[in-house]
Image (cartoon, rainbow, N blue to C red):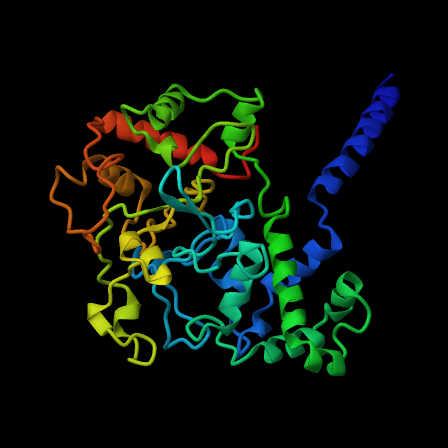
Length: 383
């Protein structure tokens, strides 16, 4: 009898395992994109990959607790250089549309990067256009040109996989010399494929299992969800919609939340060649990219998925485009009390959203409930 039960268990196990493996298996183009995403050699000095600022263990955001607790803005592969904003998550962004102006809502929608400069207007895919940027950015991976990146891929240990995906001869020197831009686009599209994969966007948070009816939220988490959605309370869902089977918790728009200047941002002390304005630099966000003062101060609304995902207790994550806030509790309290408590002045004082945040009237218990709900959005939950 025991022997029969053992064989029955073994058969069930063997039936389950292939299903699990299939769910996690990457397609060839996703495998290629992953190899590119984690390849430090694609920086000018071989010390920085995409994952250096977008690590899986932190929800594909900044992986250094000390940096997050301090400047929150990361140095590039040339360590004396630094960017100007906190790394956004590389996950759950694949549905962002090509940047466009919504006449009905009088709002810009879509694109990638905090300021929307990866518009999608060239390739029809903002995520792929975003992947083209960091390799050539002097404060990130700092390659002098596309050709260097393409040649590094041509001598990589995944060059065979590249030609399997994009065709024989696509990394031959003569072809690369004549078609450098096209091959560079292939690299970017491969990274975008990985960033759209189930590995990066698994939808395995407690909230996902709650939506599937597999788990219940605690009383505090359920209250937080209610407050999150309520127009007369948190009203978070106005920009971070929670409806549907797999909500992305972003509407892909842009907003000026009135976030204060981050005095620890290393960009202020960068050389004039990188930051000609020095300490007087102001992050105009979308307005700066578009050259439209009506959009000054507006930054892209991020997904809230994995907003609390961290490798260990005590690991610090930073919040807002410049990393000014150092905990969920702090940024939720800011949303609630920006206009009624003594917060520092906004970095950009025009076009601040005063309709949906700033004086929400939430109690301390209600703030804590919203934070508890946000913590249900971390992938990797076991029901």
